[in-house]
Image (cartoon, rainbow, N blue to C red; front, side):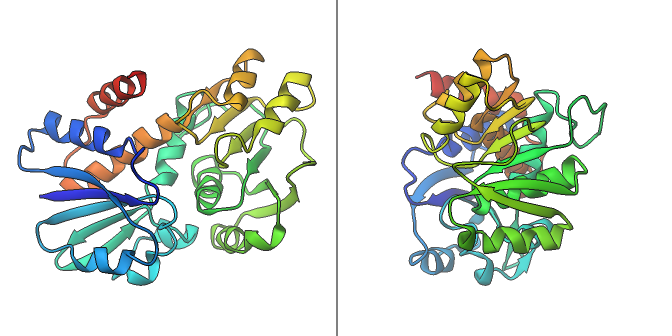
Length: 279
């Protein structure tokens, strides 16, 4: 069986390392996983070329929203968020899923933020999300579905670009307060989630260094280069940090289970990914 990750650019992706490690651990000798450069214009053709030998696809930017009209079925979570990062081929149909949300919930659980199984709430229920794209929509869903919160503040540069985010918020039943990216109204969030590229959150790193911003927990979705300036500043301030590798690992584990029908070998995947990052 074949599987792949699609995106543009895609050469840097760690997904092949994680999925191939899972196949080895599961004894799936006939399975392969590759990285395919693909943008929105090529996506219909690439999907059309996936025959019965294909198990599924992982999708990264800029395809998570573009894929929706090309799917036969969309899972409830992907529909709520307005983004699918996973396509599973089954019965001749294309099924869209979102594994970013459970990936985020599990990544947050690793640093003590209450996860799917609940747990004591030891932090204020205030969330500040940086960015308004597809990943921010998944972060909003993680806040709503995983943490049980009904509101969040989102810092964006252009409020007009947050239409998809606000639509997702309506579907999720979450109240969103938009704030200026350069001058956010929240200075002491219980949880700060950065969904912006490496370097774009450096101004927030400076604020943490100077004591102007004091989150209780930080989640930065970047995994390369790592650590980011934001993560370094948080660690210096003794703030628990979840990074993009934890997200990538947990969402990939969900994908492996969806595509193979078998429980994902999480620790084998973690070891392979950490080794690749070290190299």
